[in-house]
Structure formats: C-alpha cells, structure tokens
Image (cartoon, rainbow, N blue to C red; front, top):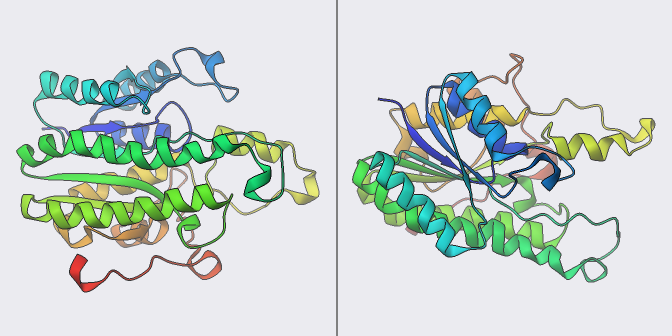
Length: 280
C-alpha cells in the first residue's frame, strides 16, 4: 500500500522537490500552496503543475489551494485527506512566507513583514501538525518532518529566519516526546544550499566573480531522504532529533538525483544541539 503524504508549500522550491521525490516512490501526495497561476509568483510554478509532475514521476498528485495563515483552510485540508483516504503516513511542514527585500543592514531596517515567517513557517507548522496528528496516530505509524536549516544555530538571513528554524527544531523535539507512545516520529531535517528557482534568480543577479561555485543540493534530495527514513525499521530511533540531511542521506544510502552525495556543512555552519534527557 502506497504512502499518503501532505507536503505544505510545495508549489516550488524545496517543497516541490520533496513532493516530486515522494511521488517517485509511489506515494499519493497532497500538494499545498497559494499559487494557482504561474504569474502568482515571480518564480513561477503552481500547485497543479507540481501535482502533474508527481503523476509523471509515478505517484499521484493532489493539488489543494491553501493559505497556511488561514487555520480553517488548514483544517479543511486534513478533513479532505480523512474523507478521501482515512489515514496519513507523512506530513512535511515546509510552508513559509518569505518577504523579498533589497534592503541591507539590520533587522530594524528591513520590512516588518519579514516577521511573518514566524507565522507562516513556524505557527503554521504547529497548526498542520495539530490536524495531522490524529490521522497519523490512527494509522499506527507516521512521520512529521519540519524542513530545517543551519540557520537554527548560525546567523543566516536574520533573526526571523533563525527563530523560525530554531523553533521548528524544538517543536519537532517536543512533538516527538508526546507522539512516541503512538509510534509516530517527528524530526527536523536540515537542508543545505538548494538549487531552487529563487536561488537561481538570486545568483543570476550577482557578478560572475561573486557567484558561489559549490554544488547545490537538488530540492528532490530531501524528499528522497524522507522516503528512506519513513521506510527504515529504526524510524523511531531518529524521532525528536534535528538531523542534517546530507549526513542522514549518507547513513541511509541516499544520493542526489545526479548520483552525488551532498556535503554536510556541520564544520562551517554548526550542527544540531544535543537534546536534554527529558526529550529522549
């Protein structure tokens, strides 16, 4: 029986790649996002396009238009999953509200809307998990993944980004504690520099001599890792932890779409902190 998954914020970027990789494993994937027309974002992409690519990859894509700042819309999403399948195997919390700004300097010099990342990007993870948990528990086995980043322990993009990522790690740890008796795991998976539409647009604006030359992870890599993690017999041993995707992929024998193994940035940007004994 194929897995049923929900990937939030899957119109483009990391969420799209994760959804495609889960689809390639044969999963039915509910794709959420706000973009229904390619012109809704300067980076293109729609939920229908992602769903169609999942179909082509061998899975089944189900596009659902959801504004993750709307709690009622999120509740209806999971009500739909329950009506149509009666269960859920995997929830990937990836939805985030990023504010484009050309302003440099301190956080006080950037648009206040930058803080919306803490709403759609942290609070929305909690709301989606709240509605997903009963379906995962009823299933007898499940996995919640928050997409994380080294910005949890290193300065990256600013305080709102750091707070969102650090909060996502701790949220996964605390949820894991309460879900453990139900055989449902919760983790945060740190992604490296991704080859996304947004990243390519940003790099194209830089002078050639300032463009980084390091290879970037494909957005599908994290989805491949999630698929392998869910299938692992020792899934619950990972629950509660923030995990570096490159390291977890190497352990599980997962490579990127070009066959390479992404590198961990632990020794340049830091690694996840140890959990207190009360969370283990």
